Image (cartoon, rainbow, N blue to C red; front, side):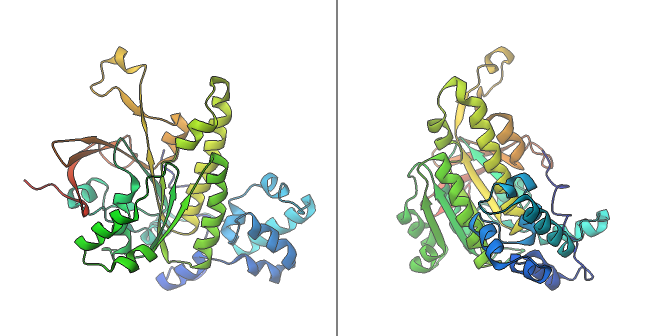
Length: 339
């Protein structure tokens, strides 16, 4: 599903859409609420649940805010009111919105073919999902290198299946002649043990992005569904699993838009019971159901080719045609396939 018209346009930049001003207004600190009569203790409560920007308040329902310990309904009303004073909730013209979209950047995958398939690389303010392929380690380094439309930056890696291998990064660093220690220093790593823990880590992620605005460019979750499958294994638990998954994906989408970062998640495949009836060539599909399908802006299905070759195909994207790209996985990460 295309998530373009959702909440980026909620934030109108008061000045003429100057690029520099845009960066500033993009991260409006929640402390600004003090000027509008909200006390420091309440602001602290908001920060404790990972709400650090004015936009973050706008992206949270009153009901959710009332669940924050120590915030009464009256206080929440006041907070919402104050936040609305700081952000004009008005409409944008499509032209203004296209100016706003200029902040979106693309992170190279390391393969030109693959980047072309993705329309320039892994997009910021969006969730890109890859299934059927390698672990997320392979994607890490390229985000640190300056790209065509942005300066390099740091990465957060949330690992749910214990697949993260720092040595892998050293090999990739060699390919780009980058300093090993510097490369490893730019990656913040956390291991998630349950789906709840995975969700709690996102609060930490939001706080980190807020502490160092504009420094982090990529959030990787490898893999997004593994812990949900473990925690909700029974048939009767599917509804609850999907509801929790929806909350997490919504949080991810908000974080990516609030802090202008790219979110990259890996996923597993499952046999599609309905596929044998329709004679599909590839009867596997990503798990997570409709909820994950609608949350991901771009879905990439990966399959093995000869040797180190992999074939990436766009799987139902709103913007991209369903093309394929062939790339190679080498010791140095993702690269172009050699003829």
